[in-house]
Length: 123
Image 1 (cartoon, rainbow, N blue to C red):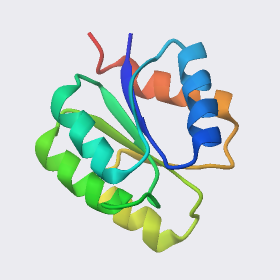
Image 2: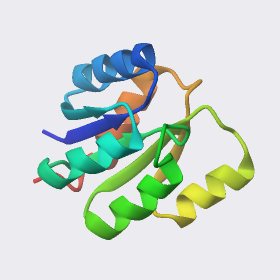
Image 3: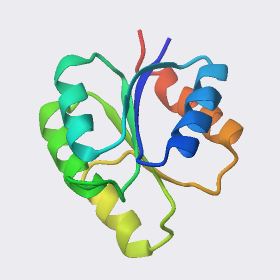
Image 4: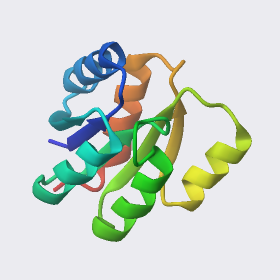
């Protein structure tokens, strides 16, 4: 079973996302509501992926991508963002995100895509 950490500062969104990924057979092993909390959780938690927002209180999602790519290169970093700015998408991918998903995506579609994305990397 794939293990993920969720990071977003909006409680309603994170709750809906946690429910959707759990229904898809993915285990939520951590929830962070800020970049600092995400970095702390990443130091002590075993996971396969992180789903993170770009607009979180410090450090922001871009800085988290950079730090996580250095500290946990084996993790799949998936951005789930309300931004549809091409520059944000490019920057996130350049910093190591494996994909960029808009928050307007149906949660069930997102969960299914995550499951498929991680299927090959989970033993």
